[in-house]
Length: 61
Image (cartoon, rainbow, N blue to C red):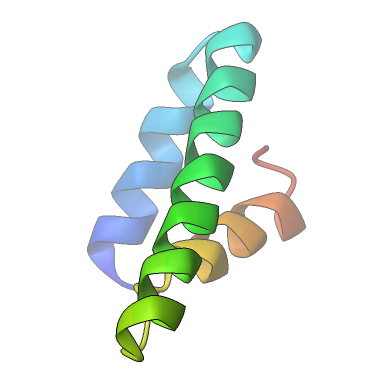
């Protein structure tokens, strides 16, 4: 895993649970928007969903 992802996980671990929940909701909204834009422009999307799923799988979210 990249150093950036690892650092993001470390920072998330330090945040209050309520803030992490809000962050997850915001990221999910961003993923939906990113998908809609990608479909409209027929371009590949940013791998935000992959990062979110990795964090969930590791129990960080």
